[in-house]
Image (cartoon, rainbow, N blue to C red; front, side, top):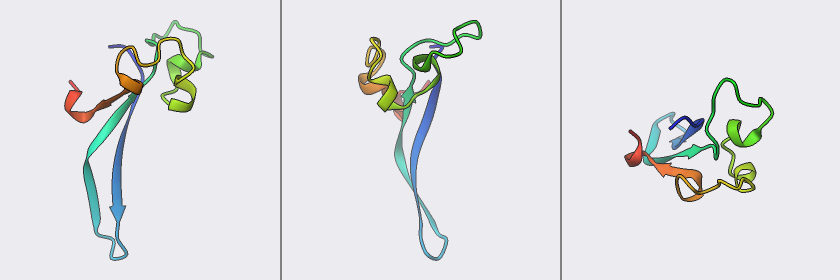
Length: 74
């Protein structure tokens, strides 16, 4: 899969600076495949933000809501 992605994870930092990490994060995918030769201004290739991706005709074709749990990462 030649798509841009980002990884989301939740971390709580307590007042004593102790950190707690929630293990079930997720990966957000772009709707369109990326290559160096592609149009630089196509936001559906470059940005993984759901507010932008939901307007792509390819939104949700690879994964529901363009998001995958960490357990699906290969």
